[in-house]
Image 1 (tube, helix red, strand yellow):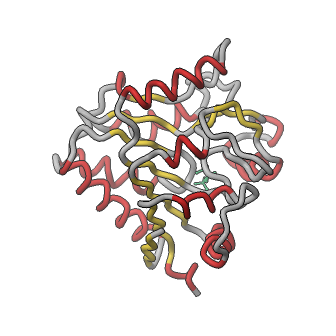
Image 2 (cartoon, rainbow, N blue to C red):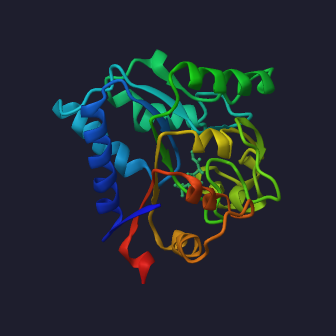
Length: 240
Ligand code: F6R
């Protein structure tokens, strides 16, 4: 794992934006894996700005989101479809047909999961995967467990994740308990991975990752140690 340490969350987003901007200039046909949550918001804002200035274009880019809650329609404010439109897609020159997000509503989730993996492969695989991390070490909705699912699947959210994510909902009871999520294998198949972590709450998570030379399903982020091109962009304070 390569580590890039920056002084604050804006500098983390700036370092990530520079990676995306140079990658998109080199390959305008990139396939991007995308994350939601609080962490990537500053990066998305910087990429929107670069797109508006004409530095980069998304008109040939394809995207696949990591995950989405089960049970929320696309127009629900907590849905990741809503999040992606509001925070990124509505503001860039991307073709909506090229944006793939797991649905919150479906009558065949297992069928969807298989089709999603096939669609990623048909697009040529993911060139650059963006990740955040949960305080408990989850990546996408691969929660700490004895065994982890390899490919896209229906995931149960842990009580910790439900609690942490309740900040996006009126009441903790409103947080969905299930999600569609890429698996650890789907993530590790990506050619390059960039994980962003900011804020004091993620400091113990990243410190644990850097201190232990273990790959442990009870700490899913540790699987990034097995990837040949994974970069963590974190706050300098995490190294103290
Ligand atoms: C989101 C996702 C999650 C988040 C993680 C951190 O698509 O897959 O794993 O990256 O829960 O969320 P934030 O950034 O809100 O702290």
